[in-house]
Length: 272
Length: 260
Ligand SMILES: Nc1ncnc2c1ncn2[C@@H]1O[C@H](COP(=O)(O)OP(=O)(O)OP(=O)(O)O)[C@@H](O)[C@H]1O
Ligand SMILES: [Mg+2]
Image 1 (tube, rainbow over the protein chains, first blue to last red):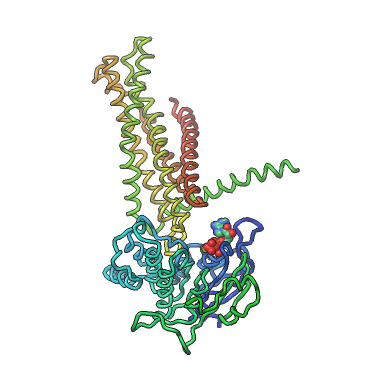
Image 2 (image 1 turned 135 degrees about the vertical axis):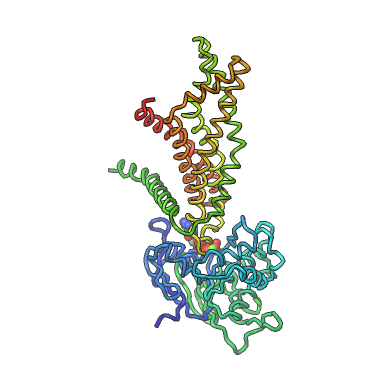
């Protein structure tokens, strides 16, 4: 059965203006436990792909199934229960700027109908999630008072607070300095290894993918260790102008002779 | 053939936009009777749209009433009828100027405010985030604003009417030496039921114009901060013009069916 696929695209096309395909016949499947790194130039359709996976965009052809349910033609009000089991980090964090960080993180707990959290457990959950991203001290701050990296972390806290089995990260490291970017990637790997989540990670930086593929979170030291013989389930995917031009493991990616694909690949020793 | 194609292409944009607007209106109305109700948001909007508009409504009401008494008093003086200033001021305020000026002021303040708030949320993906996190943006953002404006605009209009009468009285007293008792009993007796109905129905209708046009342009914003600015201006202009046009039509209907 295909039930083990948390996300499945079957020849999906998306267009906003007639005749301009932003996604062109994309097909792939994400089995449980896999982390998928999505590379691609600016404007290649990475954000649109993630939004389509969540049913935030309408498709013009093909089928999308999310957590085993076909969401292609579902009306919006039937999508909420499925979306409640997916966490999404938006490209610009998309924190609600009229609310504090704590209120932002509590938002999905309060508003997802299928998630029942007793009122008295709410604060504990919010704190736990913010502790996970090491932002517990910023509870009552407003998003405008945070730095870009802190905002990204708060948005990750909001995405993981409901404990979803599938996470979609849109450019988690874009526009951040290398140290902060590493911290964010460490959080994503920590989330994967602590909660066994499946994830799609959009990025421009090959080293992010390299980290995900070859490192594991060490709960004792709180750092990333080389995964060694405990190989991770990581697949790379490259988008070019809405088309899927590469899909495969890291070794295949590095061996790929396509010049567009090669542009995204940096040798690991330069990366980590 | 070419020309008709061009005309069709030219009309396509506005037609599609109008269709979207009807869809938004339909959904927002339907949500009034649907769960969940965001009562906190309704209260918040009532405060910002209603209470927040009181100063501007006091000012417009006072000065429009005063200037009307000034001009009407002078015109009536020619017939030796300055004493009837109260009647004229009261009828014009309640039927026309109160509703339309209040609506225009609130449109300037809130249609644009709503459009810029929702527009910023749109371009920073907060609207998508809302949908991803289990809330329907129309239920959470549009319906509360619609309800809040629908409740508050008639109230604001009543305030505006009253303050206008006060302004008219002060001018009448200072310039034409009107008797207070005479003025106030005239303003009261001049009004018949249909004036009051008209004076409250109009703002109720305009409230939907203000809130829905504001939300519509906000939710359609695209293209960064520039797009938000554009949406803000468009919302204000569209709301004001629609109010002025509707005002004439509603006036015509009332004249035809109530006989005054
Ligand atoms: N709502 C929309 N309406 C119209 N066009 C859109 C919309 N969203 C995206 N596009 C178009 O789709 C294409 C892909 O955009 P997308 O945001 O997915 O790029 P991206 O790969 O995420 O780029 P970046 O790395 O810069 O974030 C772009 O050409 C963009 O103009
Ligand atoms: Mg993007």
